[in-house]
Amino acid sequence: MRFAPDRGTAKRFAVAVCAGALAGCASLPPPAPPQAPVTAVEAPFSIGGRISARRGDAAVAGAFTWRHDGQHDSIELSTPLGQILAKLDGDAHDVTVHLSDGRVESGPTWSALTEKAFGVTIPVDGLASWIRALPQPIAQYSVERDDSGRVSLLRQDGWEVVYAYADNAAPRPFRVTLRYPGAEPIEVRVVVDRWQ
Image (cartoon, rainbow, N blue to C red):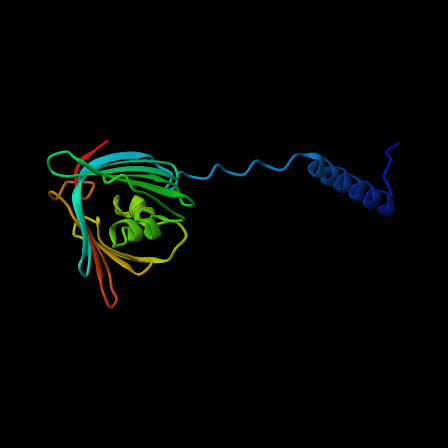
């Protein structure tokens, strides 16, 4: 003799199976969020080269070495003969510069500190991304590319950044020119002689 459950029993059985399945899912821990990719600002680098910055009559120029590690930067600015002009050190919240005349200046941002120490803004926080032809994370930007697909012009935070490459195969720019418009426009030129 075969047992044939009535319609009500089958329905209750289906509801019980679904409820059990949902309860099992609810007891599972939520999946781990995917690991965030390393952003341009976090990726470390070490470079050396030459830099000049000008706004009106205020100007600074020299050779530099720059070590960027996560959110922290250390920069040495020196004369062509190797005499240290300034040592800058800091992060997004606290920056200090030791000048060759013994003065020590500090400020809350790179822009404020370089303006105070040299009379011209050098946007080190933005330059940490821009030196690699990358936009800063989050902030809006626009780019133009060359025939090889590399960034030739980047606009972000009011700055216009123009790139020059050593040849058609070079993956990174060797010269970066930044311009900021205004009553007294700012121009910063960086030539990178070595990457590490």
